[in-house]
Length: 493
Image 1 (tube, helix red, strand yellow):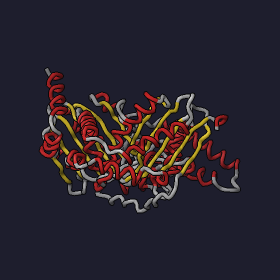
Image 2 (cartoon, rainbow, N blue to C red):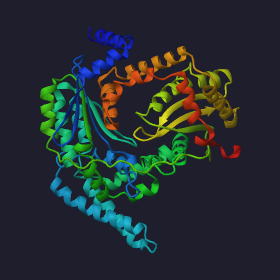
Image 3 (cartoon, helix red, strand yellow):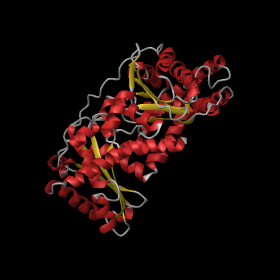
């Protein structure tokens, strides 16, 4: 009966007008603000005895200075290392050892970049660090958070760091919600960044695997660094190699203490609970945290692009192509227009590019479109394609530009517009089906600005006309606003 009930509710949501669901959001989402500045979003859903719990911070890779690049991502790793009570066998003894490790590690970092480094002295310090780390491992209890959550029915325990935000999440039984509050509030107050230098090496390897050895990662990183010249969206969230090498325990602690605080925090709970006692519980554990300081806005403004930017990458992999255009971000009206344009252009098997490039001309094996790299500041519309072996990137580009020109010369039909709107809204509703999907979306939009963006979304889409699409295409989809990255094997270049 339960499964049938959930399916029927979901079918109702898909068939009902979005306005009905939007009003349901207005009625169901309870927004509260603790005295220390934390925002709390609560949504009661009594379909199953579970809760999706998200904690997001309005800080990500774009908020780092040149001295901090990669800090937010490394912090995500370090936040799983435990606290003064979790993850340790004897914190009093461990604390002294951690200080010794930090002192030696900082000495190594200093010597490593000296022009006249004493190599023998450097090696002695590195050997000393290995001994200290081995001694320290005897005091560490690995994966304590995961173990506790797992033993209590928690699933999906994870985190992610983007250009704009950092989020920690878990899905757990409703009767374990206070356990979540105990663990997460303790993590924010008493986090211990143990195994720092080991984890920094892990991040180095992650960068090598995900960017330097991956054609997709390498292309995407190159695209952003080419399309952006000033704005920090040009930098990878993981940091450049030179950034990772210079990350320091004191620097990440300072960044954490300043920004991972209530004034920058959004707590989102969706599931089987009663709102008032849950709010009191959240306030009891998180309301005592120091407010912190707001994350300052990024003041670097990307200048208007004045000509096409093009990069060719030689790499031992199948050829690939990425094309990007600068565009405004939410809630600028042009962003809604781009949502419809991108849907018609490249979303699904009925989209123009899929039919033209994959089915009819058989130039590519796949084609995708997405907004990148963030949503707090003006971003990009990115097209990504894998040409067939017998086709060149030039042929694919020509076919893409031909389809883009159609938006400038042919008005879309009412049927095309309505179908695109329906597809977009259906996709959103599917994403809201489960507790975690709704929690993720509310958390994301509240972190970026205001969750009420969802409430007004369909209305804004319905205001978009065929003339709007044509106007946006003419203003943005032109050569001077374009960045192109191709990846080709060296012998083909």
